[in-house]
Length: 220
Image 1 (spheres, one colour):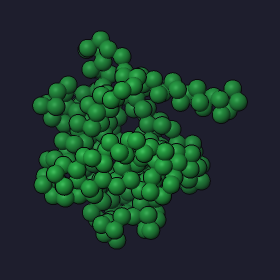
Image 2 (cartoon, one colour):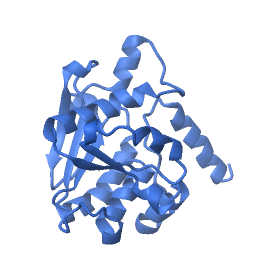
Image 3 (cartoon, helix red, strand yellow):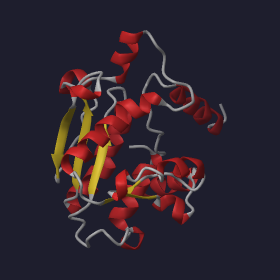
């Protein structure tokens, strides 16, 4: 739901030349996956619902929204929606019955990770996404488009080594196109007239960092 992922999805929907060769012309084999942490800003979800979901509906693209069911991977996941006609997202863990990252932090008495391996992201996003793919795609080969930008070569070097025995073929369309985060933001602003925020949990240090950067850009 962040800047680069949203930019990549929107370009895929609107620009046939941006699409990987494996995508069918009618986009019937495209799956957009979203993982809810339980702590995403509702304003970000509202932007997705207002600007991106209508494009998905128009093209009948399959959207799958997942979250963790409990603190352990063995608890499984909650599929919040699996539809080609999405109208909203489901960020509220109490209302929609899933396990929030902040619940884990409170239960363990810890603060969000400030660096290193970012295990919070791996648990709250990676686990439910990987679980869904393993369950529904099984041993089938698939292309996994990841929204790393032109400045994230180090992240790509790590991610590209995960091929799951050849089943997963990762690609990085924004990086290949040379698009920076700033260019992605400008593209979305040109389409929708809003500055797209970074997707992050409300308690994350990145939330405070982006707030400071926003104030600086506004001259405050």
